[in-house]
Length: 399
Image 1 (cartoon, helix red, strand yellow):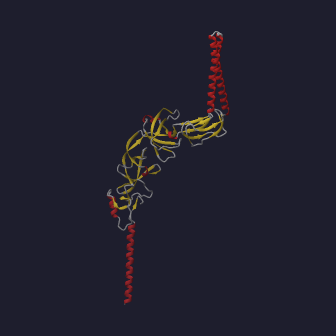
Image 2 (cartoon, one colour; image 1 turned 135 degrees about the horizontal axis):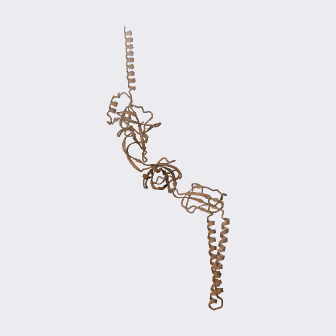
Image 3 (cartoon, helix red, strand yellow; image 1 turned 180 degrees about the vertical axis):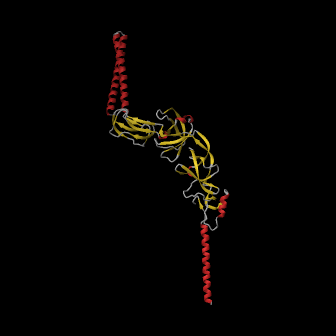
């Protein structure tokens, strides 16, 4: 009887163990189905508040240098040498290009020789006049001879002046065969090469001063009365991932005859300036400021023409549709015209995996999930309802 009793006892223990395992499995499945709250910290959300919203007319245009020189040929000659290339820095007076000066040097030598001959003729006529004056004083010559000597002296003076003028003109023509930099700057565009024929007026090079760049923009004629010198301007330039700050220097008193737009000249403020001219720029003149609810750009989710945010309301995460107004030209924030109220909490960097209705738990920091904040009472109730056997809740920060 001992053996059957031992066998029956073993079977009973096995069945009891199986029953306990099934019961534990059911409890584990039930615990796994409990939704885990989303942990967020103060760094994960932003509170909607009233802020000053800068407003003003839109300005579009390009970045242009204030100091620029369009160097053109002043004489007709062959281009003998080009010494500077695009992008090279130059100093005032540096030689940029040289034209053929053979004929001009010959003209200069001839005119200088003619000026020396005229000077010798004048000296001789003056000596002759002085001798005749002495003879006339002693009665040994006639008055007519003295007058003739004075006429020859005057003619020699006129010939000398004309010869010097021709020499100066020849010297200028010779100097014009050398194209030199008018100021310190950079060669922005080279137009000729060795062997080209440079006619009078042909463009040789362009030189700009990169330290004199400014924003030459256009505004609508409707906004002219609101724009004044000294107003701040925030704008962006194609090719630069930053926002530039400027100040209105002047408003053109005449509108464009074709577009009816008005040009506004804007100076850069601060050390942040581009080093390339001709780039497109667009911004807004800060002509006024209004109070409005604002939201940061990173918190907005765009779906076609509609905009949404993930807001924390009553301890849960909700996808809220919002209507955006004008954008602040200084910070890039948007005005909120509908959808949110002052004091609402919105996630700064929403993720695509968020679900509407997810419970939210506020924590002191991303690394301390146990220290719950007493901000929303509903969040504390959610935390208390989670069984102790559940795994650690998820965090919005991903830490």
